[in-house]
Length: 212
Image (cartoon, rainbow, N blue to C red; front, side, top):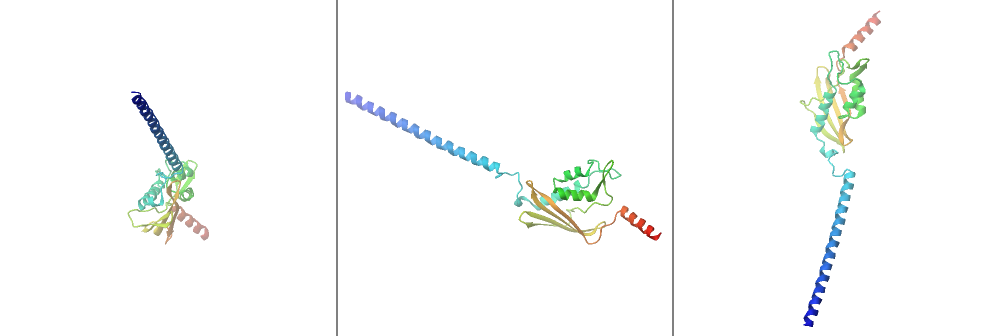
């Protein structure tokens, strides 16, 4: 009888020891898993901070002909704001305001050059210069789109109109602030564009003075 009691006590002690060892292993495994999760979370946070895996920036492989066309046609719309019959711009009072509005599609210096050539400030507001609109992209006409450098793209369109004659429009796009903007906008004319009324009147006045 004593033998059986001793035997049962030994079994009980062994069971208790085995149970304690199993609990220790579970705790250890849980701790390792928690550590791994923490490391993964920290890695994800670092990646997010560095901008990796984020869709906010447009990579060169994402920039398409449709993107470039959209920006160019949008530029044409932004440079033709609503005006009064006298040519006064309704929604902008100064050149700076218009340039700022163009910054969604062009870099600042290109916007300044375009606005300077097409608009003028007067005492009562901003006006369109007579006959000074530059040619814009005509998406219904033929044009080319190609990658010219690792992160630079270009649209070229050759066209002919009654106002401008034959010309070639070249717009270059480069990455800036997580998107692509027009950083160069050039128009080459085969013939000089049609002169506006003010220029013609000035020439006529000069000729009259020379005749006198």
